[in-house]
Image 1 (cartoon, rainbow, N blue to C red):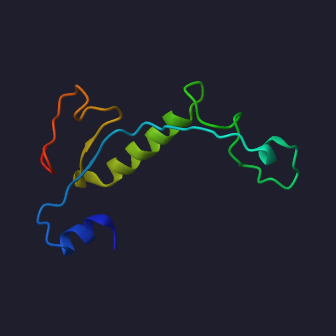
Image 2 (image 1 turned 135 degrees about the horizontal axis):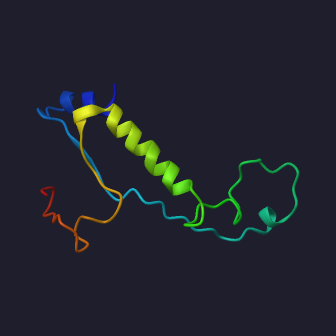
Image 3 (image 1 turned 90 degrees about the vertical axis):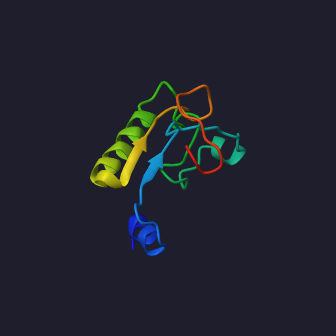
Length: 99
């Protein structure tokens, strides 16, 4: 059962999804084991060289993937924002669960 169906089953008559603040925040803590040249280490392991940064397209790919999925879900996804538009000097204000 997908999220929309679960919301309807829970009694929400007009199930909608709003997604905000899609940006990636990444940090890296040094691990001496990762700094070693270890042939057994997983090829896709996160390292300072592979971590998403503003200098890579990782966030753009992430953002495009999320947008694609929202389009596929049609009218269920009502709002999608990339940056802090809610309660951060943006155009929307929340109080409790109300926008």
